[in-house]
Length: 276
Image (tube, rainbow, N blue to C red; front, side):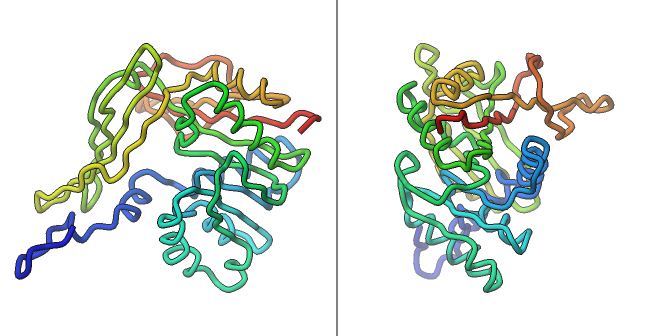
């Protein structure tokens, strides 16, 4: 938003929504640690190549190539402006060798062909934008098809009884407040509208920095659709609980029993069947 001439710009006017999103939503180090450790446990070999679907700025893809000299990554997203931001802010900051091992591609994750990879990542619940079973199954089939024969598909999911409510949740950071706004929820079809806002110490705010129109998929539905799409297995990795605080401990392990929490985040890890 342009400021009136002579008027001091607010913090919201100066804010870059992508920078604040990455600071408040993404944790590439923890995510990639889980992905690489789990991949080694399942396959017996090191993870080298990833495809980041719905990659946005390609933050995770760039973090991956920066973390190992033989790591490669491709990111796929429909939004060219966001991809270009990532090229200027993330890819350009890599050394020459790393820049040659990452590519951010504008394309539809449903039909963009890339070289087979060890792991496909679809994180931050981005696949929730597919609101019908047919479309989500189609995506899972495409993602599984992008893998090497022993590759692994990694997804995350959220839920809990608060996920069905219309609410605002604020998280304080050093120089801003992150606001997660579950603005609308329809229990008949599980469709929801979620918004991200940023509030600043000077009283200014960036409303609707990001807006999502999703279907709140359940874990059984996701597993069923993965298997229908050709996955050999689809395993839920549930977060453990810190005995002292009662909060999540950040350690995810395979489980068939979850807790009826107000809010939870889990990983779904799928392996391709022989036909993929």
